[in-house]
Length: 81
Image (cartoon, rainbow, N blue to C red; front, side, top):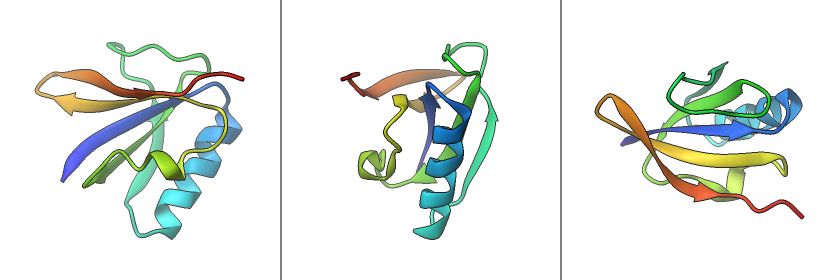
């Protein structure tokens, strides 16, 4: 399993996503965004899964990153409408 973090535009969106992932059996928790990654609200959701779980992200999701060594690489970004 890979370790992912997703950043959000709002804290509420992070909370909703964390709850959705947990309900699907994916261990997830909210945490401050790592210094190497920026975000609008400063909160991210950290989780481990076989894939980025794009379909579980709330509407205010910003970007999904995969942990690689000591850093993170963006694997998906959500376009604002």
